[in-house]
Length: 213
Image (cartoon, rainbow, N blue to C red):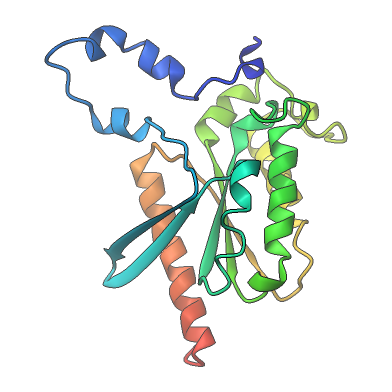
């Protein structure tokens, strides 16, 4: 299987399998159809919403190399950074640089953000996303393609724990805790659970910063 060699959206097969349905004049997108669409983030996109009686301001930023210079200086006062990594891209290369492994690039970016002087007191929440795709891929594409030193089994639990450990190891501060979650963005129950946990982290850290915790 050479699918990792092509720069295809993860949802390509999903939508190709539904071409007849989508081509119908009566077609209405389902919740899953909407969740599986993707528009690449460019620049900085601000989203405001209320959850659990709290007002959130979320800034979505592009992770591509050309996008980073637009945003890395803008977030000195943020409460938390949610860093999202696609677990399933461990055997793929960047669109903008086909000599660089995507997971290696994510590790470098995570290192630069986690240890940035502007984010010393900022909570770092790591989403290891696309766990469903990773669970399927790891059985046919070895993690050693990304980490040659890996000695474990090519199975979901052991391999995902190894990847998580690589990211946590980038943290050079004994005072900073990295909050990790395995996620599937198209699984609404999983996202609800994770977002509840993230909200609790943000509330706790705000109370701690105010001397109330």
